[in-house]
Length: 362
Image 1 (cartoon, rainbow, N blue to C red):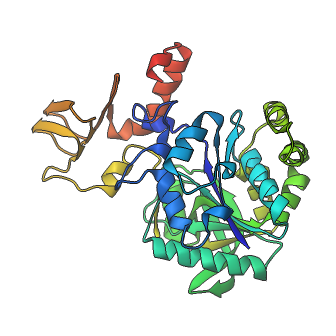
Image 2 (image 1 turned 90 degrees about the vertical axis):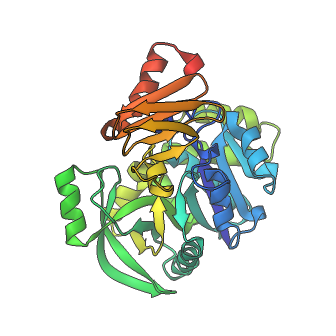
């Protein structure tokens, strides 16, 4: 039976100042009226009912998650006591799901993606569920055919074709590649043998658990103690103790890269448009531009302004004169102004604020 796990614990630092500690990126709207988190649950709802959906988030975000997802039972919202990256998060989700369904198939989705059309995503999920039955010992990842030579995404090198279902092709994975320099990204795209790594996975709960036990037995052992204590009165104490003692790691480093080289990973080449909403330039990709190429949310007066991304809260006016290719974002007590070419460095501002103990702006 298919279960869904949504990872919603990130901080979204590249979306400062809109994304803050109290309300990170996954709770914000970037296109339409639903937040990224709500959109993620909406997308999987036609396939997986709420009773088989889990959200793993930060302990501080349980209430906001529950408010945004009233259709989800509170016992399906798990609040991590501290951040330990995606491998412990995924291990915990797999263990809790397996407690009630040892033969479960799981789709793992980050909460901060935009995907359209949703029916094509659902077609890919149906195919992945069938692939998991056909190859139960494999791990499956969703690849995105690249539309430009991005230096901000990881890549997956495709091998031979392994199967096809519902018009979705499945390939053996040769290797995962880190975010490349521009020249190498161009080579990847030109070769036609690489897809972007979306970070969406499907696997049998038992299969991912076996790989975690082999590659990171420390994580597996700690998570097993948490899962064993889950039905007991000691849940909170053991959860906090084990998680705080755990050495975090991403699922890519902990499992997927070595498993890929060992021939255990297969990739669906997906048919939908995808964006991981990794920076403020996502507004430009998902919203219309005015006659001067500006993407504007909120009140704006412009004189000789072109190619800018501008966003302000209601009641706040941004006026610009003679500026070009800037990101200008106002939210609450802070305003960001940056060249579009430097927008990936926004997290450096967040790091500086932390270093300077300027918590009122975080």
